[in-house]
Structure formats: C-alpha cells, structure tokens
Length: 141
Image (cartoon, rainbow, N blue to C red; front, side):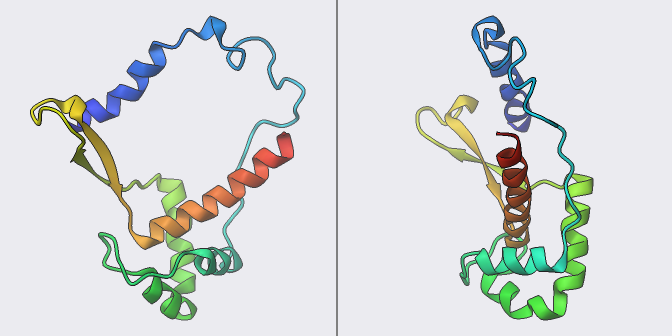
C-alpha cells in the first residue's frame, strides 16, 4: 500500500502534457530575480511566534503532546525545541502515514487515501517553514 502512495505522484506527473503548460515551457519567470531559496536559521523568537499562533487544544498526536502543554512548557523547552526543528529540516523527517478508506471496494488500493498523523511539534515546524516560504514567494512575485 505504501509503495502505491509513494509512486502515484510521479505516475500522475508523467501524464501531464508539458508542451501545453505555459508554466513548464519558455522563460516563465526568467526575470523574476533569484529563484533559489535557503531557509534561515530558526531563532527562539520564531519558535515563540509559531507556538503562539498554533491553535490551543488539549488533543494530541502520536507524540502524546498537546499544543496546550507545549505552550505551558515552552519557556523550559525552547532551546531543545529549536534544535529539534532545525534538525527536522536538515534530516527531512516525515510524519507517520496511515491508509484511510474512502469508499468502494475495500480490497482496491485506489479506494484508500494517505493520512499523515502529525505531532504538535510537526505542526509548529510546518508553520515556521510556511512563514519562510511565503516570505520568499512574496519577494519574487
């Protein structure tokens, strides 16, 4: 099942007619400046801001940490948390994925969709990466 989800994206991309897509041909964005993006080092302030913007909930992911607890503990764990976020980006750590049945015949793998079970720290990480990516895209557009 995991092999199916890992290969379906490339299979779908291979079906796209690149010659008719204006985003894939010619010099689109040729004069839009530097297209290279490098992530800036996350600071404690980035971690604080990202945590404060996270919805407060007592629900938790597979790490058994709620956003409520994370906000309470933040002053005491901010340094190791910043280290974890930086390492996650460098090591490209991913979420645990499970298959969720949609509809139809249960024996057909096409009737399942992948669901990522994200710990609260991953949600914080996602917000920090989003902020930097959004800033980069606003600069080039």
